[in-house]
Image 1: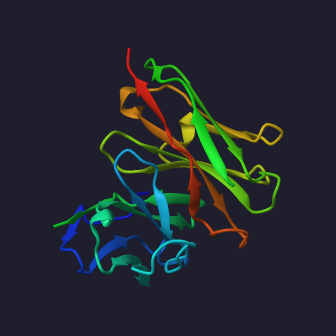
Image 2 (image 1 turned 30 degrees about the vertical axis):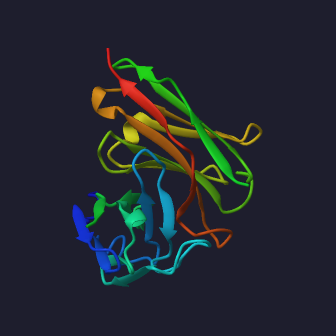
Image 3 (image 1 turned 180 degrees about the horizontal axis):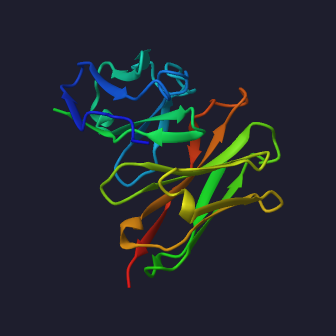
Length: 110
Length: 124
């Protein structure tokens, strides 16, 4: 069982939009609407920013949005801000009764 | 308010068994749908899911670590304990516990509340 595949890094200028992909298989992302996304600033615990592929928890700005197509989920950050500079991880349930993270994506605000 | 806090030894010797404890408040593991999961993160590396225990005492483990892990709960103390045998320097990491729910009682299958983590170093 391999981790979900994310790009190592993505960058953008303030105000721009960026998209982070998370690719799995038909046994995980492709079979369930259970992808969640986390933001992690250095030295802190991850923070939930999306769940069930596209839903935002209370308090998360609508600049963060999610989508999914086949075995790939995506996180889009619109109106990029300096505080969005962080590591982002996807997380999904798998049909083998396990869960897995992506390898993480470092977002840099130029 | 939901909180979780991890505790454990800062230093473990190779081949020893690690025991880390997650003490939580603001929810009960007797509630249908409630679960607690363990996640670790080696320095500078990605998050790795380790194990999960649910309200019904069902236990799930990472396939790659299944033979070394045991997760258990003590609902009277609001604690979840993870043990990992045969520790190696590559197991050096921050170990987090987090709440995860199912059945619509919170954010389904998402780690919605995390502890601050406990840093474990494996070295002789």
